[in-house]
Length: 323
Image (tube, rainbow, N blue to C red):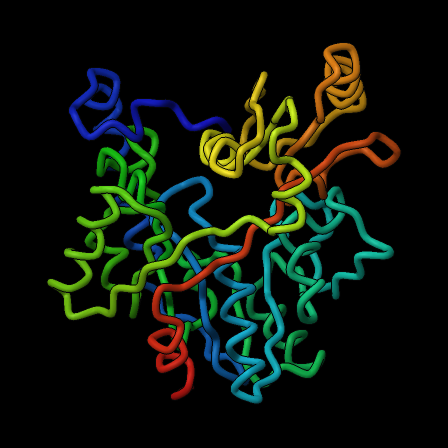
């Protein structure tokens, strides 16, 4: 789904107030579900989640966590639900054999860095991770899913929007009441700048939780190739405007943009229309690395990969070292 603009406005919106009773019911059920005890995995589980619907930078964070764990001599294996894929799993992701329609877009990115297991049943998925050689599991998403106990849960926030309007879906972007979610995490990571992110860090500090900061840094080679070029940019992520802002920051000449819902499955007709428009206007067609995983084969498209740069990587390393 495409997140409505009023979710991210802190001032009260009439539609948010109208939907608040539904959000209260949904939030109560979500909080009760989060309170259930999960099954202990055969090895430690690091969960990278977020409080809100849509993207906040979980996948780059999961990749950064796996890199730090490798440096510590650990054997991380990723565990993902495989949102958008049709395979229930558990199945080990093989990028040469699987596509986004089978396993989802994020697992294809994760599998480039370490073994990745897709499983809708998180407990069965954890067993498959261990069978794949894991001595520690890195979950991409799943904070609100209680089935598997988490050893360390890190909540990721977009610094530009934080908790949005602070209301629970559908009145706002929260997956469950913020208070219930704070009680389930051991650290907060804010990606990017903004007053909403600063307030998140203050809330974490008030609860005695470590507050980490980071930013998404574009791949320098890809950025250089797009600098000064006229582009038609499209994205199907939680907040497409974040991607468009990144293109402007690297110096791309943004001539046109197209936004799609998060995890949008591009049809051949949609992809063909975008490619034809870019060709007719002599523009470079460019998208996110995640969206490229869902792009039909055979049609040209450029992408702008990003990686997480932590302000204090040693702080995250300290959290992981004791697991």
